[in-house]
Image (cartoon, rainbow, N blue to C red; front, side, top):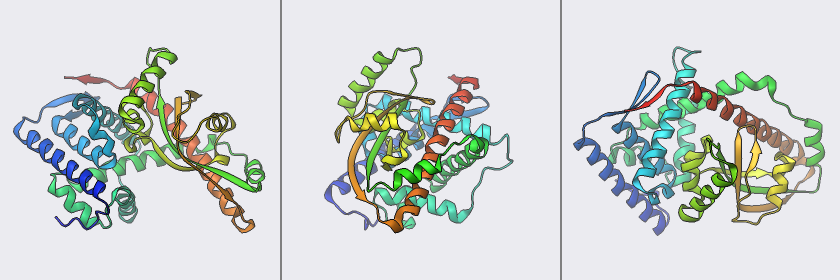
Length: 315
């Protein structure tokens, strides 16, 4: 395989490590019987499903490889369970879960470009070398994208945006941007202090990305909780106050939200002076961010309800 996408020694070592682990995983999967491990309603999750999911997650987040084997398996299992629940709910409203081929191609590119691949063929060769089919990743992307569209159609009339307030905020001379990561968690019969201490200890031991994989119920957990750059003007005042009280590299105390308790980490901060001709673009960006934030909360709440109503049996 021609590794033309490798830019640094650290990237090279990381991808070699993934390659080694994938080879081990696939050898184990081939030598062991493909057993049914979990039943989610009428859907099954097998040992091969777990192996493929671990490989997929390792591509997205190199920090995964630092966790213990049982923790990695638990993360893969929880991801697959949520995926099965989403799929079942979507099939109540459509006979086939699909998206436009060109749009799917773009979403696949959005997956592999941030991790160092320049072209689809390079990515496919890397996957095939390690026994992973591109279809597996396309199926996950297709379900998640259909889920996002489903949530939008279901809750779009409940979205509340004060456009006049956004315009007023944007006309200020400076805007602060935060590069954020998140962990959204439930208490699950635990008290807040105990759960937060457990998460904090895991962050110290395993890093924020791996802790997001372990504890976060948000869809961003696949990427280690990374949210990218977020405009301060798109963030609610109570959350912005929490962020303004910590430094780059630190994380907030738990913040109560409709979808659960939220921990945010600041990876970086920048400030920009807005020009007059950029105001309309900035307003549109902030409104879209606010819409996405509200939809994410609706999604988490609805998925939580579906999980409670699902029959999940580990065999």
